[in-house]
Length: 472
Ligand SMILES: Cc1cc2nc3c(=O)[nH]c(=O)nc-3n(C[C@H](O)[C@H](O)[C@H](O)COP(=O)(O)OP(=O)(O)OC[C@H]3O[C@@H](n4cnc5c(N)ncnc54)[C@H](O)[C@@H]3O)c2cc1C
Picture (cartoon, rainbow, N blue to C red):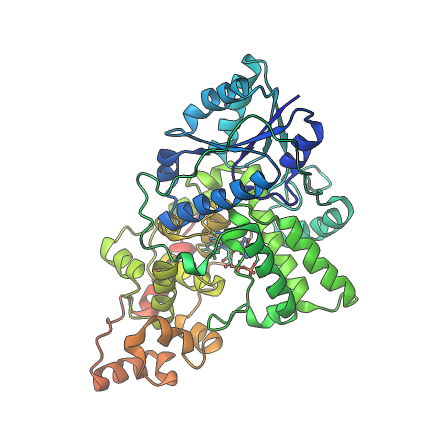
């Protein structure tokens, strides 16, 4: 029996359920495959930096698999439609009787896998699917009445018990005898994606790098609950791109934090808070599976469809380019544009600014983030956008609109982050960065080239409040 492991967003050896199961059952070796689907990635608005990171990680995976004598084959299909023929044919050609995959929960990905399973069946090849992407599988948790939890806090209580009682990691597969199939080269470029501007120096690929980040973060995890909101310090794990392509598993992260928590007799607030963030990741996957319409441009709360979302191109352009005249918003957007990543506090601030202060359609922001983020993930991105726009499950109440100046005063008091991303504001005193009148005065007196406010703060806020109040 030979097994084919189809790697997708699980580009690792350690704690990889499908790979472990495939190796356990194969007595004639394991073969790996990765499908490059450029047109599908374009349809999904994947960012060039994300595709580059994905491909770099496929390359490091191929090297690691080669040490185990597992060849990684690379096939290119235009899109998911070609996957059934490609995978079933490859399984037959390589003499594999079973295809092993870790489930992907998005609608298109699930449909693709159903179709691949059917094509395999017709070719006499079995397909085995495993839960691996989240710590607790979606649908594993439901209310006493068997309904899905749409509120985070009760979900988290059950999640905590389930994770501790049922979740475990899998051992690494052992080196197999050499088989007569050679691995394929991994391409340097992908049609339709421009790799030239990606900041690869910030995101080195590979499992070792992801583990190093986890080790480094573990040393400062106790400060996470305080430092995670301050964009000028490295207070978060910076693991999101690695979790997204599965170079590290969410389970590995959870167990590390849980060990730290246990060794402090449950007193480590940083570790507790970090586990809670990992739970949000599971929660948004759980919501997407229970309510797939959220990932297809529909709000979780249907009545918010009545909001007259604006489609003002010039306001949207100012937001995209980090030229709104609101320093903390501009700093966040420039971080995204320059590095492919944005600090969580700023994702909330910028998303709320677009959807509330500018009342621009949240779907525009969701799409733009996806097209730029190295960690772009449908469920987390959608969850974050619907939270900020107050259209989602357990989202921020519509009247709690962040004031960008109070946010920067609280989380960037000395203006360190703002000045780093908006160097034209270097000479503006910190106090003026957090006060609209003082900011305008400083800009005028120092003769700085910085845009006027794209919207009057009070007027924008009132417009959003009245739009939400008039919902029936
Ligand atoms: C509007 C908006 C859009 C977002 N889009 C994405 C996205 O496309 N991809 C993405 O991975 N995260 C997204 N997030 C969540 C969060 O901002 C990032 O996960 C986090 O900033 C990544 O940095 P980190 O790895 O240092 O996180 P840490 O603070 O170290 O957290 C550890 C991990 O937990 C998960 N996580 C943390 N916060 C959240 C959250 N609120 N929701 C879901 N998972 C979370 C991530 O996998 C993260 O890597 C979004 C948030 C908002 C408000």
